[in-house]
Image (cartoon, helix red, strand yellow):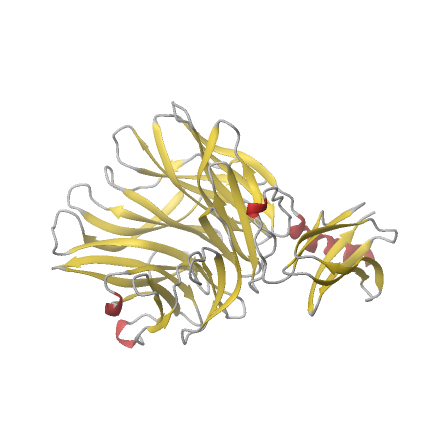
Length: 491
């Protein structure tokens, strides 16, 4: 019985103990191809669906799909092109995994001659795919009248499986530029919506952008969209019929949503990448109420541009930031607490520069990133790279510019499980009295590692146990705040 319990504890900690793995080269492209717009989702914790847009010669843009096995470190199926109209211009908006299916949203011209634009939702497993054009309208070649285009489209998990699709339709009618916020609910295993609706937020014309939606109770969705001209935002509840929609709740907030998410407890969290306070370029985690109230949970600053963000209801947000030389990763848990400082996920080799990236979180606690690297000199060669890291794995941040300023305690351990020494990293938001101690499963204090005043910033400690193997708890107490994490000692 003890052996079984020990095995269960070992497996429960394994998800959080996964090290940094990779990088792996998933695809390589010759100079004949113009490659960009990478997107990623992960099925069954190990199959990474990679989508990329490329153009060869003078032909139209192609959206290509490949499947990379994260456990075997190789392509699982032969890469193939999705069935898009030839000669058109297309853009990959978002990718999402739901159960054993992947979903992909692509916008662009549905005809190279008529000027018809559309938003097409694909669903598939490996190479088999279904598709459905969610929206179609005329755009170019029609002057001021009847022109419209789809922008800022996103996918999120639908309660019961499937996806919620959201975005904006920008239309030119006469001398006006009008904006519709649209939301579509698509059940698991389908590309056909159970409902679709839109709202015309006339108070926001012409400066509405950044629409996101998240599934809430039943088959309803909560949508948030931003009016960048008036430093206001709005929340709308979509439930399938336009006539039954309540009016948008408008509130003052310079909010630009990067990722909208619903926790397992029903809270709505938002990752915001624009200003919350004047002259502040920090990344923020906010909690949103349906009455329009915004509560700031945490924030940190970075001088690098955000590439992508992902959400998992058991772990939280993951976001990638990039420069030509570094790919950085931030993790924020479901309570809005920064898990680690902004760490270096990958450093480019001297011949390449990092251009774009995407990120996903698996059910077993892996953060998976995909990114494009290109050579700086002619001819330009491109390659699509991948790496994964455990949710609780500490990433080095050698340059102080990468270090955020936490609003609460940060505590991490590595490796976990461990068989000799445990590295403990913690960060304090300000100078205060600190106690770092080890407890066993009976609540007895085994060892005190730190006891005294600690300065603001990062700190490290090492625990080399002189006790029996088993489950222990590392507890950090700083003022009135307490942070605890469990570790497994396997001598």
